Length: 548
Image (tube, rainbow, N blue to C red):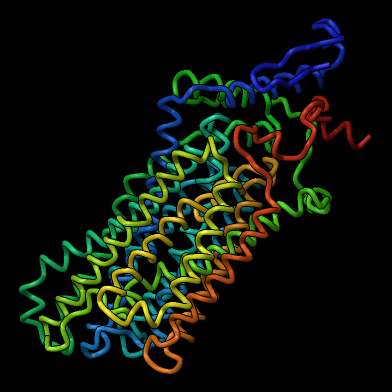
């Protein structure tokens, strides 16, 4: 019998001679030995490369998503007669288009990555992001086409590409990572989201400062130079994507996909030896391919796997936790500028007019977004990085949802008093930064990691895509709800109650977290809830023979 210890495969009550009469035994042993080699490997240059290539994608994603925070205000100055604000429907359209695209992309690319391969899809989604981002930057207007509508279409397409990046980057980084560093590797990839969000605000600040003189001289009803500014801000999002594209297209296929989905154990074993020693891989086109008998993805197999409660509850847990989290994360993240203005933090003096008012408003929004990123978002990611493999995913997620419930209750029920005076407004901003911190040192990080670990290889990307799409459904609901509710009883008068609603969803996230398992220091195969001994039953039966 073969025994998988996590470090090696040993044999008992049998011998190598006996194995010769059991072809399935030797293939099964080879598979588990290759997996053990991946799971116990030391951190190497190849792991760093995977982290860097995947991380650049998330940097680009966050830049492109959250730059609209500032760009929407710029669009308001240019296309709403200098008002500095788009109409409610226009603002909602440009902000909700990307999450809707995300939802589609996560489901589509999550499924495709399990069907045709991680490698074949990796880079395709980045090309979509690059083209759609460039399309926004050069968008124009005609008699029959409104420029806001054109931007909404491009942002929807960009969202599809960004959505595809979630399951692909998560699964690729998890399947290449060693067991003892998997959480930190995946967190390091995801943490680039914080740097992308900060960079969007920093680039906007530089652009606004560079154009200060031009803004002051502009016609205050059209602001032609602000029209250039938002295009530069959005267009620069292409650059990191273009840099990363080559590396994404040349990254090797994960050995787990090659073994368990392509069912080519020999090639996967060779790939493991290559990328762990040289960081490269080679596929011999003339090599004989020996397929094996192993569980194969199909509609019947999918239903059989997820019809078991121990598997279904995990999918429900990962999906609802992400849904609940994104209600608040995107409800706030895409409306930082609105909330900063609502509490009077950084708003321009009412005595200012024309170009000076526009410049001051844009500058303050940029500074406010940078402060929120540095004070909460970025530290949260890296504190999670420190504890993710020691404390564990589940405790961090439970703690995060608990703290967010408390913080949103404080901000929501005490909203009127917290915005009443300048000192109280500073207290509100402090609480707001704490929510950003505990979102990232909490469920925003863990909801990305856990779905990339808990499903079997043949459904890992699909499961992650379903979970992530559930999150983006929450983002869409939050964005629509925020836009429709915030001005009830007056401009921004309902924000306090919106924060109370967010508190309720954070509370429900505590209960959904109880459905997921702890994944730290466990192999992906252990987490799949499938027996790994005898997973491969022997060489695949030739199709000609199967017809007899």
